[in-house]
Length: 122
Image (cartoon, rainbow, N blue to C red; front, top):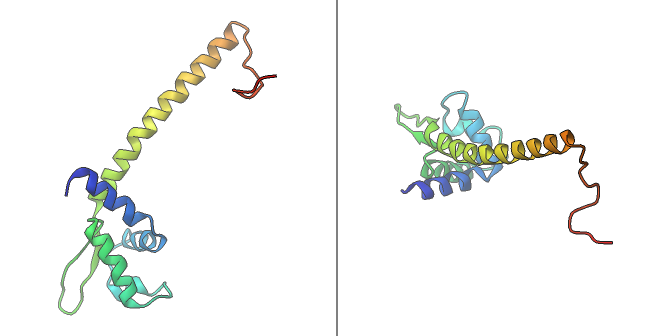
């Protein structure tokens, strides 16, 4: 899967509150499907469908220990998503810093920012 497809799969998987809750549970340590299904009012097959989405996105993995198939969270896709979001946060932070600099400059020369909304004419 290419980087853009990984990111798409990660955000698609994270778009569902049940899947986010499952990841929150797995952040505390591995758990079986039965353990993950306990807090939800849905069938085990429905939970399994959510797990498959998370697994396809690479957000979780499953192993086999005798009769048990524990799920565990995989940090890689979340790190990639965080890096992507962080890139845009830095851009916006730079934009706000330039706005702060402009307002400070205007205050220093005695200018006042207009109180009228932009784009309205009298």
